[in-house]
Image (cartoon, rainbow, N blue to C red; front, top):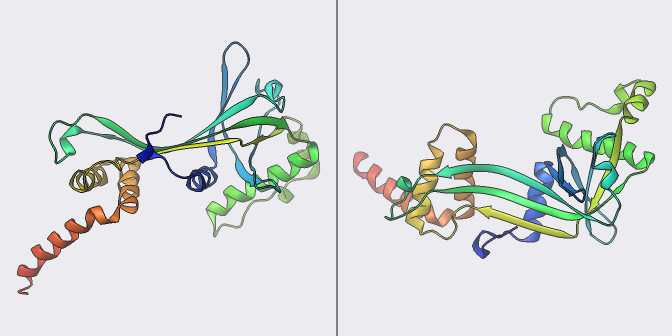
Length: 227
C-alpha cells in the first residue's frame, strides 16, 4: 500500500483498526487472476505475538484450494471514506481529494482443523454478538447438534499468519489548521454518515486545530451575555 509518511498510522493503531472493524476483503492469486471474497474475521495472536486473522468461507469458494500455508494473501479492511470539495478549503488553488481509513494485512493462509473451526465459529459470533448488547448473545449452543454439524460441513476454516501490516489513515493531516478545521466543519454538515464520521476522526486526530474556533465562539458569545 502506498502511504505518505503523514498518513501512516503505527502498527498498533493499524491492528486495532482491523480488529475493531472485523470485516474485509480477502484476496489471493490463482496463477491467472485475482480471487477475492468479502468476509468477517477476528484477530488473535500466537504465543510469540504474531497476529493471526481467523475466518471461514463456503467449502466451494475457490480460495480454499489456494490456502497452501506458504503463498501470501492480502486482507484489505476499509473504514469510512468521504469526498472533499476544493470549495471547502480556506486556502486557494486546491483540488478534489478523498479521505479514508484503510489497513492491509498480508501473509500465508492455512486450513483449520475441525476442532479449530468449532472454536473459530464461536469466537467469531461472540465478537459480533457483543456489538448488540444488552441483547442476550446468540451462541451455537442454541442450535441442535445435528443441525450445527450439518452446516459446518458446508464451510472451511482458515487462518492468516499476518507477516505485514500496512495502514493509511488519510485525514489531510498535512494541511494547515485553518484548512483542516474548515474541512472537518464542512464534512460534519454533510448528510451521509461516512462524511460525519471522518469529520469526527479529524477532530480526534488534531484537537488543537480547532482551538481557534473555540476561542472565536466564546468571543462571539461574550458580548451577547454582556460579559
